[in-house]
Length: 342
Image: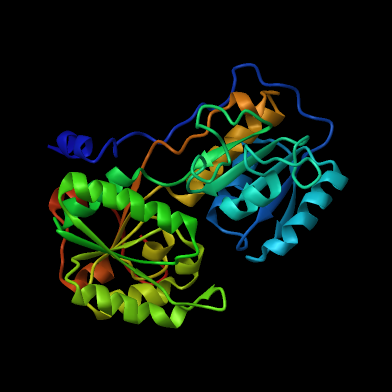
């Protein structure tokens, strides 16, 4: 029964693993490897996982940490600094930082982007769609990285195994490409699986999305008869996740999150995610192959962790009175209590 259920969700039961290193361990470097870490919204779990991997493997590194605090105008300065410092490797967090610092595969300018220094990226939701790489087998250039989004079909299968809804709603930021891609994918699946997707863009004023418009958008979706709210990977919605998930709870509307924060640190009901920490560790493993084992980045495929985490927020389950089927509950990481503690 368990095996059949896992198969229906598209391989949820795969074990999280990657090679632990080559059999012959190279000699330790004369100095720590210098890694320039360019972050978008501060230090978080993916960055921590990246750092911890080197500690756990006994690989000496010096991390030069820079955070643009969601201000991409700072990124050209990061590029110049990394080049001037002649670091051994660059780590970029998120789509915006990656595109601005590494360029897209069809538009790379050595004067504006990092080209001579190997780089790894993490938390890029659509590496191919964002044109960071032409395909997942090879970047064709001096970079590699990880993807972190669970395939949309697996997400939808998980959501509908909880509640077989016929109408799925989504509040989104119309300025965020990740959200637009998610809408297209959901609608394609809706056609194939016979469910309707209803979307509500947040208001935009002077080129910026307005958080205060979120509750009204959630209410309009509830009035439209949606049975579940999908939360896409979106920095604006992540920053305002408390507003979004509380609005859904006020409307007695279950929420499914594509990333972990809305479930672990807010009030989303359930998420089917690759944990940021694990993504960070996998990215560090790829960095190890470059730094320690001298593997060219273009020879390292872009992939995601092998194991999906189903995260269930029990206080929200109880507040909604909508309980999961037992076969789903048996697979879930249950969050029960303040601060997202399992």
